Image (cartoon, rainbow, N blue to C red; front, side, top):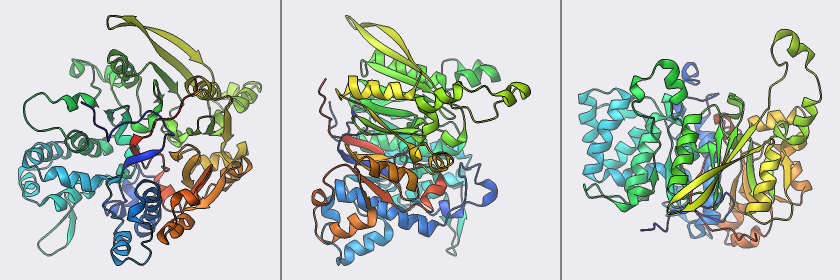
Length: 496
């Protein structure tokens, strides 16, 4: 059975459906002393963040569900939806709305709430209270952690999950399968659990009956080796399966990229390669090991694809800069046993499935030394492009390349090939796109024209960089690629 609302075979095919989550009230209640515990680098001005995110939602609607916005400039219902960032779209799906839907099913609710209470260490009284709540109110509480007392005063029943705005990390679509994340940090456990239920019972429409459900086979959930609980503390660190969506790219129909980073483990990569090869879902997996640093916690903070033949790359990871660094001897580092500058080394190991017949296969291994080589291979071998152009973040100019990577200059969501959304604060990277012939438009320009009745395909006609306001969104340390979980993309024409 095929679910025609779930299929992704590239990073750049025309986007038709995705999952997002607007900044919620829980984010506005993070205090400075626990921001790092909740994986935030700063506290944010919530109202301003929601305004910026509202422009992101409207741009997505312009491309994915134009009827919700086109010609609606003076429509009171649309203006009210804009104030609440709630447009009830079947194409720009929101986590809270999908969670509300599954909570109308009593069977699902009685499975989910005890699971949430177990990981949050809630008492039975709190669990009973949650089970008695209406679905919409319950969904909001499960996300924000906030309840109301009898006097209408807010209080926390458990911590907020502010990273849920980065829906890329809770799952990834590989063909018509959904890979569930297993977060590295405990702060993200609840959002992973909530998405697991959304994936099974809303996206894939699984029933709660005990009969085997074919759609459930479309969920990939990686497990620790058995018996994991008998391992020592050191062994547990080596065997722990942690994987987040920012480290997985469904880059072409037969090729998946997996990052080994601060958040994704070798054990997870091993399990994923085994799973996609065993089921013959994927022919090649490129595993990319990057340094374990907060500055680039996932591979999508280092590079993303723009077109078949065009990529954006954090310039210190480029072949040119890495070769230049290798040609210089680090005298200070040799004396003190440490590197005097950040290390940008990358290791790329490719696993290629070779069909042996009768459901048997062997695996070939290939090594690459530079991300440039990987990108060129994908552009030319996977898509049949004649060339490969790599745009260096901020033009490779220090210190701007490092500053702009910190504010997600390498993290773009492709709406369709050559049309990407990024942050307006990365002005040097914007200049690089202009030099390469990209039209640069502000999100507000596009929204205003569509609201006044102009068709999006009249406004965006070629290679285009769309810039979002980002003063507050960028404080959360994730860009538009992070803030999206594509569920359905058109296939990209391949000329190989």
